[in-house]
Length: 171
Length: 171
Image (cartoon, rainbow over all chains, first blue to last red; front, top):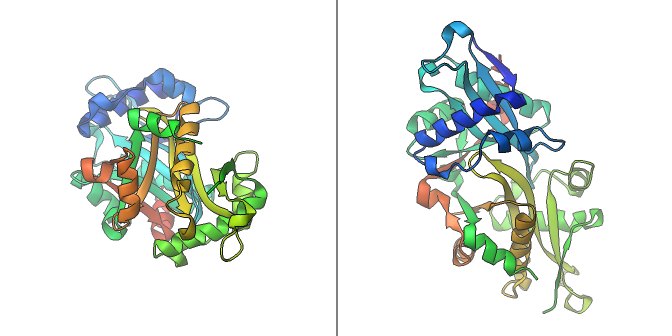
């Protein structure tokens, strides 16, 4: 199946928001999604964009059962390692179920890696749920290292009241 | 003991580089550190800084055994959640051993939380090694959630040849 990978445009944000929700349903946390295409437009396409996004599109003859031609996305941004310098973090990689197994996910991820190299980043990082074996196996087969399994890194978060209270303790 | 928390200045980068190495030694991975104060200056103080940093300083009468008054730092940057929007990620939080237990680490972290709130971020995230119980207990006691333990998030990375090869597969 033919497909193209392009940098997202503001008018893609409705499709991206739809796929963010599809991914959250797959990850069993749909009630966590609090942003809409309006925030995605504001945050990704202003003078200081908070993220970059690639969209995978199929030709019209391969339109999905429910009428979509934007069938996958990869959303990423730049972070910083105090050991290695500039790094890319891939927040989301998603392909709609009926389009999996056709190389679209690999092409999205490879394009993020290409951008990372062009921007002199020496790492491409991301997080995966431990029960999501198909994704984990896919990434490991491509040469990714599982830093949580190998070195013991745990991912921590302050949010809600804990974040409010912490901020109030600032001198 | 009195101390101050201030935004890092370019001339602090030698102290920050020194403490980055001290933290890497504590984390048992000193050979991983490949950047110096020069990259820190370039990357943190240009027109598009890749990170922000806070430095903790003590008065001269409390100079460290080896002659330092910059005794801790917190380095962070903005990331993006497709569920919640803008987020702060704290890459490093460090206080020199002889200055621990005096509230400096808490003050650094609380200041990062305050900046996060001011910048309309709803999360403060970071990573901790699972064997680093003193740090883990400290964060959990302040209300942090361990997302790896609770939800199963693993932290993955492409680097080196794996990243090169992945980029070459881009369409």
